[in-house]
Length: 166
Ligand code: SF4
Image (cartoon, rainbow, N blue to C red):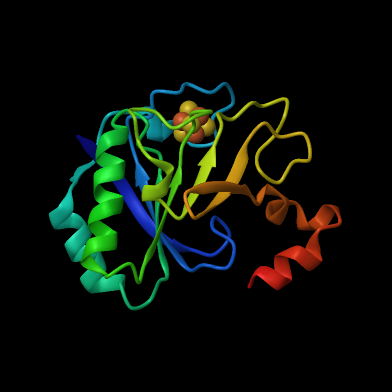
């Protein structure tokens, strides 16, 4: 079971997409220096198909992607909801998953997402916008991971790639 604390429309998390980011609680990763420690607590409303339905009615026409922020305590449910969004929208909406794991857990398939961010937060290495980061942002094309982490480091000489992707 997943619980979520909030959601918001964001532009940076998935380059080239307007995303509805759902902030999922009960994060099991315990990263030192966690940017959102409140997400480690097991609280919030249950995130299931009925909540997704309500969000799609309200925001489905305003966004191009649904982004799961967390959910590592129950990866199968994240995958199930990603597939539900695809089915409900005839794959018109993309799905993204920000996971703190280095690899997908729970026998989930990368093919069931359009974007994946993988890797825990390591304070000394920095987040996706750091050139030393351990984290990766992938676009999934034909079931393969394509590393597009450079899109987050546009200030370090990759701005052209970022603009082209939009
Ligand atoms: S994965 Fe994110 S929310 Fe979870 S402990 Fe690490 S930094 Fe915090």
